[in-house]
Structure formats: C-alpha cells, structure tokens
Length: 107
Figure (cartoon, rainbow, N blue to C red):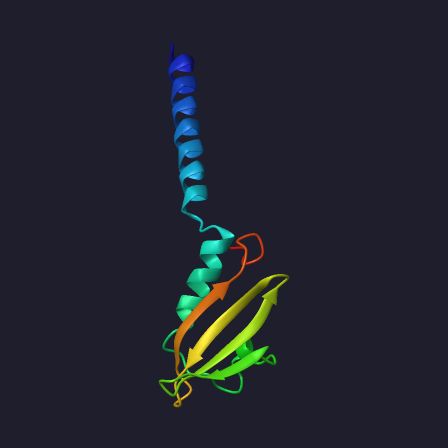
C-alpha cells in the first residue's frame, strides 16, 4: 500500500511538472512578437555611435514634416524596420514592415 501511494505521488508530481513546462512554453513570445518587442524597446534610447542595432547603412533616409529623421533598414529577405529619430538622436518610433515569416527574431 505504501508503494502504491508513493507511485501515485510520483505520478502527481510528474503531471504538475508537465503542466508547468507546458505553461512555460506558452509564455515565450512568438518570433514576430519578439521582434516587435525588441523594436519597441528601442524607443526612448539614444542612437550613439556604439549602438550596433543601427550601425548599418540605411536603405533610405527621409526628413519628415515634423523635423524628425526616418531611417529604413533591410532586416531580412522581405522585411525592413523603420525608426524615427529626433534631432537629439532619441528614437521615438520603431516598427517592422513586411511578411510575418520574414519579420522575425527568435526568442
């Protein structure tokens, strides 16, 4: 009887572990969400010379009517990301454009 109770306890612990692992997997962002969150995390940051995210040559630079600079970069095959920068070199907007299968950043 003691052995049966121990086996039931082991099965219960195993079931709890499986549910915990399954829930942890659900908590990870999708690659699309991870790219969006990463770009959103750039907002408010200064674009300094060592900021590797924007060190590449942009595809285009556009002076916006509000005086801000919009930079467009190629990210992956058909994906680009666009950042809007104040004159003070602060990022005020960042987003990706393109098909969801290309606009990804694996977690």
